[in-house]
Length: 360
Ligand SMILES: Nc1nc2c(ncn2[C@@H]2O[C@H](COP(=O)(O)OP(=O)(O)OP(=O)(O)O)[C@@H](O)[C@H]2O)c(=O)[nH]1
Ligand SMILES: [Mg+2]
Figure (tube, rainbow, N blue to C red):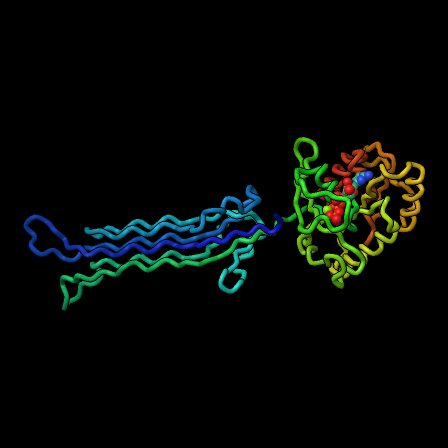
């Protein structure tokens, strides 16, 4: 699931009632009013925390409530305030009013601060406040103010680090199923994938990143051809694209590349950073694949396999793209079936993701 969404009702606490009470003491016949005030109802706050990355903890908890304030008591005792409710959500959560779809909070940044959402109701005043010259024994106290209630939807756009972009059938879903924990459907026809999927890719023992598989894109998608470009919204916050070019496709590699870039250019206002995976290299004889890749590299303006050793990867074909606006950060031939460069790809992606996080 990509846009995680959960509906909840949120209430702040009601204020406690003020007390009606009179001073009593042995031998004091008619003590004055001593009813204390009710406690304030608990308020509701949000806190954004990195340690959670889904909304799953809210499923089935339909009503989130802060505690009510306690009533006041005799002897001028104040009621205890109701405990606040702190709702902890992952970064990227939006709190949306169900009634009118208004975004009430857009919680993007982690922070130690709590963000107030609903104030608790005020406690009522006890009868000790209502003594006057005309009424020495008031039997009136305020009731506590009601808490506030809102029906909202939490929406989390799960933010992938890498979005897979390519023509249909080029092996996007196969790749994510081989290198991540996602298991999308794979089939030998176009537009197998209809909804985006996320997968966690583990790199070594300690690192991981999130990869997003989305439906295939074809030339004219920006005009609605194929499945259109609608689902690009799912990867709009992704900071790196892996453009997948199928070496065995009936569409030429250069054509795939040019038209994909053209479509992306129509959707995104700025150029995203990207790398290229040349897919299914197992399906083509090595010498021929070599020639095709050389031609492709020269088409996109990469003259030599400059930084072959940069990651210490022993690859058949490996090229690190020229730096510069619009240029790929790398071009890596892969095969998900024969596992050619699967590890190298993970490693390279991890490296460029780290780079782009440092740039930010
Ligand atoms: N020979 C070979 N075939 C592959 C490789 N990767 C994927 N395939 C095959 O290519 C076909 C399409 O694979 P998918 O992973 O479904 O392709 P996709 O890009 O997700 O396709 P859409 O969801 O339709 O956009 C399947 O028959 C796969 O088995 C590969 O590395 N080598
Ligand atoms: Mg697919």
